[in-house]
Image 1 (spheres, helix red, strand yellow):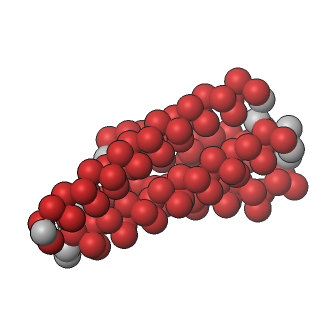
Image 2 (cartoon, helix red, strand yellow; image 1 turned 30 degrees about the horizontal axis):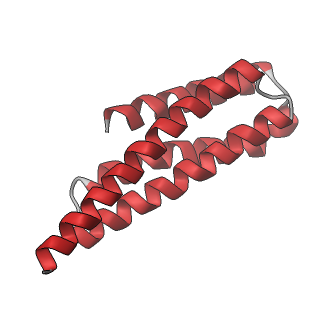
Length: 118
């Protein structure tokens, strides 16, 4: 939760920076990365109050999909010259760390759920 919250703050700061300092023509892309990047935190937060193990897994899957989408938007922003190589690498590194944590959590949750069923 802490990592996803920090990433959401980075995303919002990045978008504010882009809106102030880079091409306004790319505003729709900025909005997309803002939505997907902050959605990661929202879904992880929702997973903490999941109604069941299956609901927990579903929320984490959604967060994982949003993280993958965010990574793609970051790459596109770099390809469109909105982000420098260094900025792109930094944001991608943080996003990859979240993806790795989500994959690990999902694998553990699925294993635990299978053990309960047996």
